[in-house]
Amino acid sequence: MSDIHFNESIILVDLEAKTKEEVLTAMGENLQKLGLVKESFTPAIIAREGEFATGLPTKGVSVAIPHTDVEHVITKTISFAVLKDPVEFGVMGDPEETTPVKVVFMLAMDQAHDQLSLLQRLMQVFQDEDTLNYLANEKEAVKIKNLLAEKLDFAFEGGE
Image 1 (cartoon, one colour):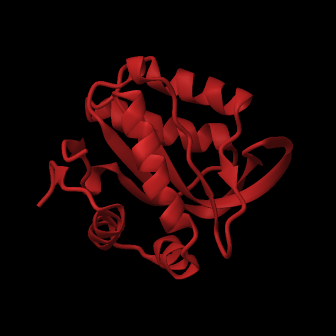
Image 2 (image 1 turned 180 degrees about the horizontal axis):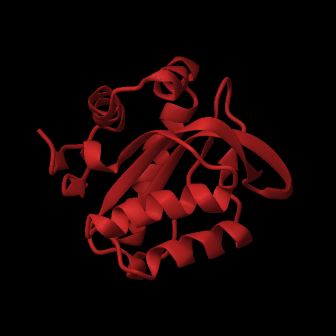
């Protein structure tokens, strides 16, 4: 999975939003503006989040991992956002329950098997409370990019 597009342009720090839809819209529109996803991506990711919640009440900092089908993706990427204030997302596997999400990993994979591989690596990050706390409090996109590239063990395109 070395052809993933991952640089500072897809990292949003102190993202202001009141609802999960606002979070997903801001992140999706950023990816669309960069030419990484199709116009259909944002509506598709919002619709999927409504059906299949992606919030995870992890230790210290809750995360969400919204994603949608490969046909909405132009270039494989993972967008990352630190929310200024936590936003309620439905809990994965229990949509009646919510968790206050502070960190969002938006996956835009162009092949289904890549998504599974990336999710497995992300789960290791989610189990590391120190890493999640660092990500939730870091203000410099380049430091976030470098840490995630190291933790997720992938080479990336489009950055230094």
